[in-house]
Image (cartoon, rainbow, N blue to C red):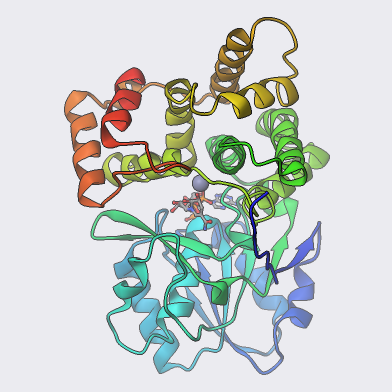
Length: 386
Ligand code: NZQ
Ligand code: ZN
């Protein structure tokens, strides 16, 4: 196991009927901006319940944060936060709203108005000294944003990740009932996103990190068990709770502590979302199977472990076990009605070219846990996924 620091200050408030506790979670004298997305939080009454819980606090609402949140939309919120002296941000929504709110929190305290400077630091923490405190009411289990220090913002039609310990949510309310209004495809996307978050941190090079591996395997097995139940049955609250907690644990830092991390599937996926508008989780499910096939030798030891411990494959040669595990992974995504070929999404050779060209422009030329996944390999992966 490699050296690591592990820090996670987010208070998780998990379970049904807990929104009233927002009153205790947010300072009584706070000036609060509630941020939300297009319409779901309003339409299904979550904003009303949240407002009622906040009593007489001074509240501003900022809606309209779109999926893959746009820098230009967030600028309007930053302006209001600064002029109105907002001192608490409450994100009510999925990953896009939570990430957008994290960006608002940092930008509002940024010394210049060139807020985009916060976006060019990749997976290193942004150089920032202050941020507005934020909390979340998470309505979509997928990204883990409710319990991590990262976000992803779209700036000039490219997706940029940013990280800062200043934007760990102070708390996140995870109420399974709030997720029951999700369209089915968002459940499927969420299962795929959480699954691939574990894979990016677990299916790399072995460093004998037994706790991280076994937590990762537990999360994957739970997603395999309860993802499809949640997808098929809106009323199975036990399965839903397990799916939600899996998604949070998939990217709250615990699995990734002290282990090599890959993130190639995410980097290719981000480019596909930016160019073709395919939802984040879905891009990952499309790409992952061929990343694993292409990297079979490179990831051989962990692929075998994944096969035996996650898919319980005990028969056959090592090669057969690995191939079957990858096929089962792809079939799992397909069982959630996620089609895993590019043609279905209208992406042809020219589309593959433009993904590769843009990744080069973004400097994404040496991906993976060992930095040896080149753009030639990206092209092979995408071509195999046609
Ligand atoms: O905008 P509204 O009307 O609210 O609708 C949203 C949106 O259209 C809807 N929705 C959310 N909760 C709902 C609901 N509809 C009905 N009932 C509910 N309870 O779902 C749609 C998608 O929402 P979005 O927030 O975009 O989805 P998700 O949570 O998958 O977030 C995706 C974003 O997170 C980033 C992605 O790149 C993408 O921008 N990621 C963030 C990460 C992080 N912070 O750590 C890591 C991830 O790998 C990912 O990159
Ligand atoms: Zn993701």
